[in-house]
Length: 479
RNA sequence: GGCCCGUUCGUCUAUCGGUUAGGACACCAGGUUUUCAACCUGGGAAGAGGGGUUCGACUCCCCUACGGGCUGCCA
Image (tube, rainbow, N blue to C red; front, side, top):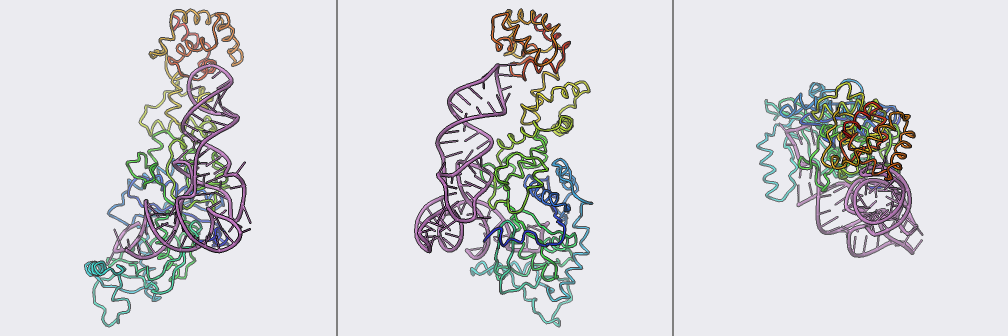
């Protein structure tokens, strides 16, 4: 762990355009941590005119499902992370992986091993009992070919037993691991299938990946993987092992923390842009920048800005950031994303007329909502149809006196000009006429117009509703 | 057990040997006000503990504590 960024190989390999990848295993929903890893890769590549690739690590046939693959693609799509080319199936490349294993054999970088799982387990058992290292040392490493049995065998990496392996990591710095801490990992199982540790390396190499940005649970693995690169004479990519995300309590994120899948966040009504912003800021920073656009994130994102300790999810801050993004979103895009949210949340779709009213109301609503459900709630005045049924609090604001005031206000509004300024002036005049403050007038107006006591500004609502609807609702309420 | 990584306000973080340790979210108090939101002003709030190195450590080194990861013919 030393000097960053001085000795960081951040731009190695130097002369190639950046290629990053996201490589999830399809065993469940796209986890929020996975989403952030994908985001970092996407940001890094897109900010440098590079390519961002997607590879599905489906070599575990037991646990991999097509549904999970679909969930990952859907999650990435919602987050707005687009990848270049087709998603690569790791399983489909198994022949290539086996070929590399055989090549390692030919180069003397690997050897055939006939040790059975039972033998290996017995070895570890004994090692544990005697307090020795449980790293397995295969008796076949230097066996005479004359003694080779005629039976299925695994292929093991012939790892150096002395010296050390140095992982130059763009985030963690220089990590040194003694080679006697690493064993001869299996690269090809005795049934001929490759293990992950080999497959990642082969795939990353073949796909031309220059920067491997992934969770720091792979940091130790990087040392082993580097041995494969070295054995094959391939250039090692830039490593960037990022800390994982934890729950609000600091523990590893799990189901009991609530939303862990990316899709959960969509269903809860967080806008994707806010999500990207928040996730980018979790474990990465650019000075004091807190709220920024995708374009800024792409421009600013760099490996040296990534922190080294795990970050906790903070839903309050997520909401705040999302609120800012809703406020600065383009109306049409917002409306479309809102529709996507409603589908994801299982809400009935808006009817054409409602969509229209919502669209008109959006400018006054988006300043006040942090999430889509909140926005929809505040939009209720524009969505409901007459007669507006007041809730209890609103009903009590519509007493006899108030209704009388509304009635007289109706007269003024019939001829009023329907601009914000004119409406404000008309309302102020009406309040003055009855010798009451604006607030006293606004309360029954809210009740009449929205059936609630908490609403957007009254003049704003009137503008959204239009003169006819406004007068009709006032008429309903004034009786 | 062994190895690796981490530890600054409650939370996300800035700081890359010299700062009154900065910002943001949250919180509290005022202000604005037409309810809510927003906004403005102010406030409380931090370097895990212990040793070094240095004129000077949050920053470099070591130890301890705590958290996390790896240690599979899982990924």
